[in-house]
Image (cartoon, rainbow, N blue to C red):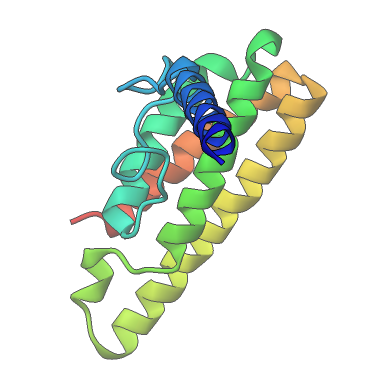
Length: 161
């Protein structure tokens, strides 16, 4: 009986030692994300929850995308950033900017519809950009990035406080 208990205790200790060694040997994640994988929506890759966070993430992703999109060696990073832009546009179009929220009645409805229309158009351009990056069409990428810049300028002129 004593030998059985001793044998079980040794097996238990060996199992625990193996578990601890395996756990300690696993690589711990870095405290900061690797280069090119910056904070999104408050950090850690989480989606933003408000229009301000979505717009801020769109600006960051667009700046990065401009350096990646036409470079075929960076197409995976560009596609990831396009996906983030698409996510953030979807979040932003589901909310109203403060300049529209402060309106009332028919004018608020009119401006809300115009804002949503502009965001839908931006989403279409992003989908076209995704196709262009996959097909590695440098001229199309350049033209679509210019369209995104124009959409950003118009949107900010129309709806930013």
